[in-house]
Image (cartoon, rainbow, N blue to C red; front, side):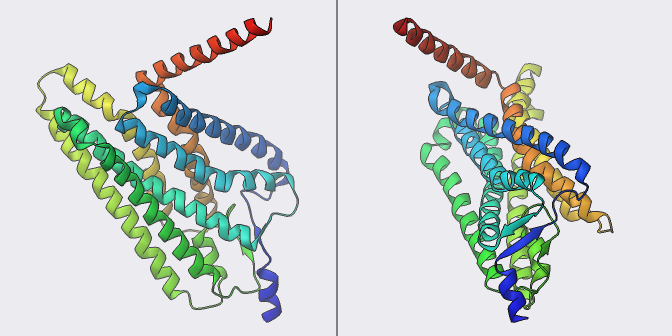
Length: 320
């Protein structure tokens, strides 16, 4: 057993998405496109909100951090998953598995609380528009971002350290396409009661507290909209929170589908598909949702592209 533990400490084997060789190349091409679009979209959104002065508002401040977390957890998983499509041995080193688990948990937890902060921001914008700039001060915005980051760092480090200080058995096959805490716990030889309890407490607190903030904010928003007399005012209010509400439904819907569905013999494959959706597809969709449904973002993109075109034209003229 001691010799087996030494072997396990060097690497794990990821089962991946599929074991069918004929699907490796199509899946690689599809997920490469999804990941590339996600990187370009989120990086572009971050750059756009930084360079355009009209997007220097609390809403776009949160949107920048949402894009950063999207980019973070998709990058923690995506490149390694794509690499495994190209090689025969789907292995991941012990240290990289711990690193992947830490960063994935950190970014995914941060995003959940950022969605809550954005819901509160939309509540203030609709229910207290005259006091919006006073309430959503720069200090409060920074606080609403800093607290989730600190909590997520503590959560991810505690879970990772608790898992990796315990002893693993000889069986080192992870039934997933990345190092996930729920997939690593069954491989432990030590008593897992404490780590399971920690995961449950942290996860329950994160999901329940953030969901309560989101639901509370949108109940107050709905009540405010119903009190509005003009159809134009209602339409403007709905358009203000439409993009965020779409992202919230996609995100929480996927998480509840994974953790609430009854377990069956096919649940492992279903969990993988759902995990693919929120680790790669949702980070790709978020920039599109906020860009296509937002005139300010589209106008800012047009201005930035025109500015870049003018700069390139001036450089070309100087060279010529």
